[in-house]
Image (cartoon, rainbow, N blue to C red; front, side):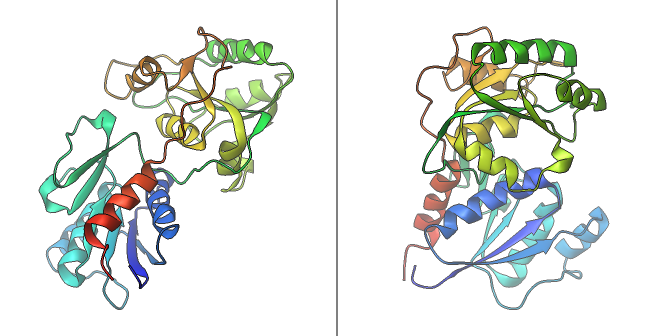
Length: 299
């Protein structure tokens, strides 16, 4: 493609959804020139429905080549934009609307949707993490989430697991961070834990964690933090998963066990992470190649 690719990205303001689009846009931008416009989806379901039916929708001038979105609130604006201005509509999750309404849906494998003409199955959510040119073998990273709709939480049991990891590699510099879901008492416990550098998620800039994921030699992630597990795998580190109690058995709570079975991650009770890591995931790059080959291979 000799000209720049015009991409309009719909966003609902949720970082987990935005990072999926950011990963794909970054991968596209390493292959072609990209002109990106960010569009905020209406917060009201009523307003989104009216826009889909032909009502007001604020759009830039011109016509897009590619429309991107992730998150329920982006589905109707994405389709309404394609109807008015054209472009290929690519949705980066399993949609609540029919799959056939989109040009392509990129659906994580754990959602159980089969590949098809309009569905590409990815190994986890897309993300922008890529390995750094050099890896810091002395750096370890621990990412802790918190209770969710799928997982309960036990800080004491989690810290027991973390201390076992630390005892195995006393010479390694361990950087630990929490998430917005973490219970307040976890930060207090972590701040008092010897042998680590604790950084609250409230005190770190947006680019801090991706930079560490790209360089760390070993990363441990609590099992509730599914997106972070896949970001760690994309960074190319040796990845371990810390157990947290599941509220029930479902497709989300089964992800960590499936990754262990396939040898992509390890648990605390398994051998220390001394073997070579699995090849870094680059699902964003793979999907970018697919999109360019399918629709934008010409001049």
